[in-house]
Length: 583
Image (cartoon, rainbow, N blue to C red; front, side):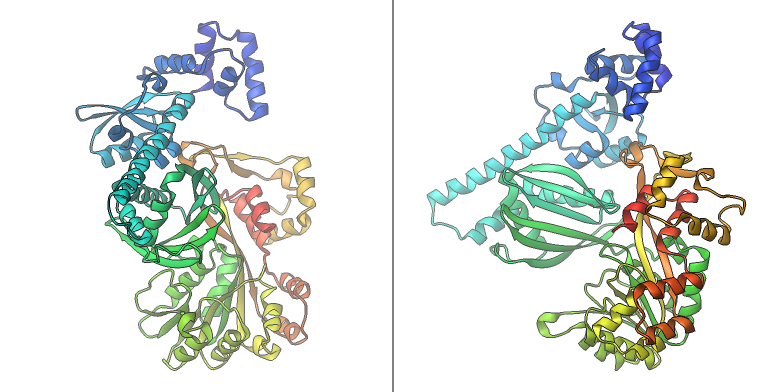
């Protein structure tokens, strides 16, 4: 429970645990260490953690429970709350009285989590305040419970093998994959990944255990550790779902499957690779029920939005989106496609893989095993009388040549290419082998992008940077140039001469964002319009630096500058802009 400092002071002073004069020193030390004052008083051994929790519970008139006093929580009660949710939200089911579920909570005021568990368990939730050490103690029981169940499964299989003809490894694994504990674990991992809006699930075998991690908002988080004994059955279950070969452990495999419910429709892409301790599995989650966002919702500021709108209204030409893997390129392309998707145009795509299904769009999946490459598929699409073509990625000279010829012969072409910034896409096409005159005459606009984590709206606070921080930023960025851009875009007053005069934002960290200070992601962008002067530079084989310099001279806002605009609007933090700009 997030206790108010003044309330904590009242409790500790009243019980003569802390003298009034010593309180101020404790508060200062907690701020200096960026630590909770409750943790600090326990760390200094002024009071035992459980005793402090009892006093806080009594002060707020909340039921208290010490889970260390419960030798073993019944398995059927413990598993009413899946382990990932227990760890993420600091909750644990530890008892039941008829239709009432006793729920230990770090924060009993977290009504959202209580309501979610009530809905899932169909029981009335009775909250109890518990300490962090109490929660950690109880969380170990998930591991013990699973380990015991899987040990029984393995023992049962071994006994059956002794008493009859030996089964094939394939049949044994298939049978283990259907066992209830295995199904429950996989279902829980997937459901919780959907609930947490994770983009990927990583299942990583270690020497003694199996680590499960989720990529949430672009950052990997440890979710749970599973007993090593579960590994064969867990991997087999995922292979069964995605229709992969269960008995193939030496080669990488790729597959996919779907989960569809009233509230979501998720497609899972599965990739397995052999590693030293077993097989590593990565599952990519794609929300097929997600609605297409607008360019403004993606984070395009007005001037960049205007450039894109101006260029997609042209009857032909190419638009490229560039950035590293996982920077939201496909989402940007699908957003532009949805804007072009009207009844009087024919839109065709060739993708690897098809990430989102779009009504009214003809989508083709590449299949190199049978020779259906991007280049071959593109040639076939051009015979289908398209107005708009989207190519998942320009990877080679053949695809690039086909793409620019399509743009030259009256089609709108959308695609992605891997470069660090927008200006870098032009020399990259030259390197691939596309003639300069083709690039200059067909390319309309290049969008460079990254994804930044958004500040959690529930714990956002404003602050000002100091001179030392500004000097540090000067080593990475051209700040005088940034101030000029901010004034030109009317973000700041023309009288401002230093970043120290401006208000920036950050997230303090709260239960809603799991104390990260961030929730969700949006893009920062740079949009390079291929003007007459840029065309001339392309024909001269100009390097990336010269192309970027000319584009900036003509008004292009660089990606990091767009990031600072988002910082001043309270969308993201300076730290995030630094992190993604240096990638």
